Image (tube, rainbow, N blue to C red):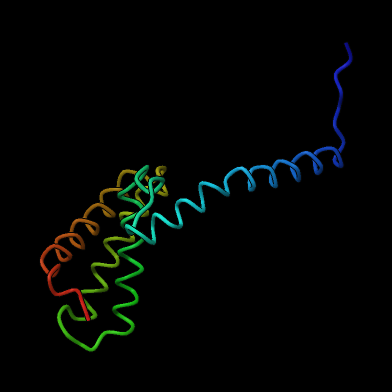
Length: 126
């Protein structure tokens, strides 16, 4: 039996169909997740990698707070260190191929940022 070689046009048709089918198939889940986040602040799909999800939410909130804060505790410098710690936490998940020295450095920054986050947790508001 002869194996069919697909042309570029066949590939474009296939992936064009696949992308739309995948988009349509995931719509009910995305709609459900939208309402779950609106109702309880997180969706079922967020718990798959919950630490990563929380780090993204917290870092965006901290950046917003730094930009629009009225100058109370923690100071912008402390907020920068906390943000950098969460950046390193995200980096450690996103970039598993870091070499040993980079991982150790990122872990130290992450731990320093998390310690400051813990210390100033009750003061992170505006």
